[in-house]
Amino acid sequence: MNIKDIFDNNEKWISEKLALDKDYFNKLSQGQSPEILYIGCSDSRVTAEELMGVKPGEVFVHRNIANMVPNTDLNVQSVINFAVKHLRVNHVVVCGHYYCGGVKAAMQPLDLGLLNPWLRDIRDVYRIHQDTLDAIENEEERYKKLVDLNVQEQCVNVIKTATVQKAYKERGIKVHGWVFDVKTGKLIDLQIDFDKILEGIMKIYRIT
Ligand code: CO
Image (cartoon, rainbow, N blue to C red; front, side, top):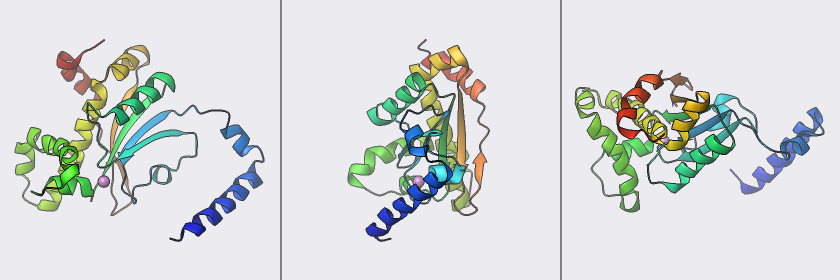
């Protein structure tokens, strides 16, 4: 990929959009009201908009290594706060993906310097679900299961926030856990039982 190509592609994209609607960018400039907040991995193969087939303005996106929602990460917490409280999204999606380098790194006993505390949150997921994971003999299957369970735990972290608890009470906001399979291109809904998780964790994390 040549950097100049990117600017050429951009010019081509502008022409295509304007050919269909000469007011396209003018309309975009007037504001956004996305329905969905998507929290996914930064992995270059897992392009949020392209895999969902959504257009600019439809999804508010946050991406980081291994789609994490650490309780003290001001970045993701600000995104959740802004999207739920101010943009009033009705759905929050945590989307993981198989063959995730971040999850793989967390499964290996390596000192990765600055990345250690980030990966430690994934290791915490392993610790919480150690019995389930250790019972899976096939390494690739175990790795995939950790991807699934990591999505589930990050959904729990989303639900723990006061912003989401309030939005649930007020307008029944939904939290979804998805996984993208890089090998098939398929987007899988993990069918996380949001109401059940909410009921269980509210005993401990209730704020509102
Ligand atoms: Co990843």
